Image (cartoon, rainbow, N blue to C red; front, side, top):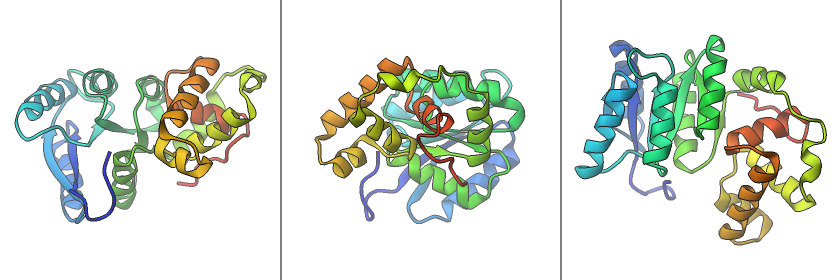
Amino acid sequence: MRGPAGAAPIRVMVVDDHAVVRAGIQAYLAAQPDVEVVAEADDGGSALDLLERLRSTIGLPDVVLMDVVMPGMDGVTAAEHVRQRYPDVQTVILTSFGELARVRRAIQAGVAGYLLKDAAPSEIVAAVRTAAKGEMHLDGQVTRRLAQQLVAPSDQLATLSARERDILVLVAAGKSNRQIATELTISERTARTHVSNILGKLRLSSRTQAALLAIQQGLAPMPTT
């Protein structure tokens, strides 16, 4: 998670099996004063090997920008491993409408966000910055489709207290634990505990799943991106 403006640049790894795509993303990111591309890989397995080498040399990246469909190890499987091995590294996945089943798996793995593959370069940068702050970046079109497909009991939110529902709304807005704590004038530890309790009560495994449920149930608005 990155600090305020003036801090070290956001360190990014780009993972995509198309060299032209990697080059284009890197060129745009490299032009940003607060972003540094530190590594690239062409599939999930190579990305995991490289992350292990980076950990013992120059340090891990803050954000991994990962394509979903790649030969060898796909992006979703790689994202699951990244979450397990390097919990402080945030992953943003690049997807298409035809890959929504894989996206649901990635959400269960705890990815920090998802983008359509044809996203504008400015949106890719925004997603990287958002993830680096410990927040979520949800593509509006993908979120709308996922929320429509979500099957959830209508009374699922009834198990939450009023405070937990307030916190769920903030989670759906992409707020980090620190931001939630500041907004509600509670400690970050208390905010983290509330979020953990919410996930437990709703039987969910990630904040992104909770955000989708809140949107699907009308508790939070749909992202506009």
